[in-house]
Length: 184
Image 1 (cartoon, rainbow, N blue to C red):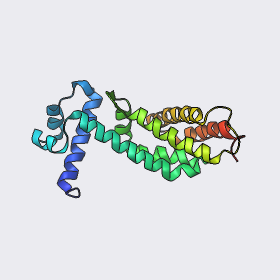
Image 2 (cartoon, rainbow, N blue to C red):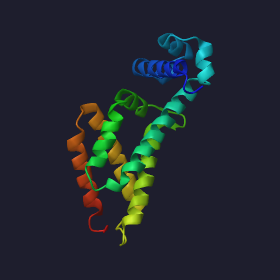
Image 3 (cartoon, rainbow, N blue to C red):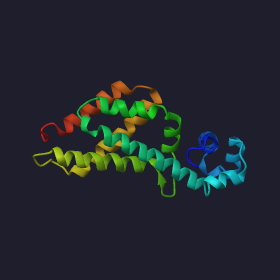
Image 4 (cartoon, rainbow, N blue to C red):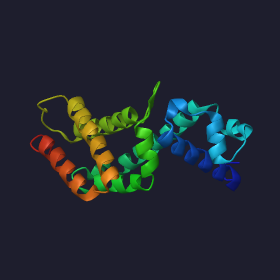
């Protein structure tokens, strides 16, 4: 039952224990037993929810990517407004510790930063293609990738320093300068 409060609490406790351990031990040194001890659950409970620590990490990364993708899709029409990035920062701020911890982890094919770069780049490339009535001086993919990497740097900086307003205004200025003469 996904709405069962016990299941919700157990998942929350497992994820919080995992984040705490990532901050102190690092991914490679964490065991399922460590997670169970910190979350105050039995191993069978952990394995009822996750295959292993890699599955836990993947599911947490996938959830952040899905949430981020939804935030971006719902707000991309306001790309010229500083409010888009401010909204992203504010939305991510409530999960700041989890976000900053997971974005630093790169294990096998699990890489939150790469996933978010792909999402931002894809959505921005589609936006630029739809908005542009003249040929851009460089490929749309290049502009989108460049901006995506800068957006992630800005998001991490804003979350680490609690400074979203100035950062979002600066980043929107960069975007507007990059595209001003090529978009309607």
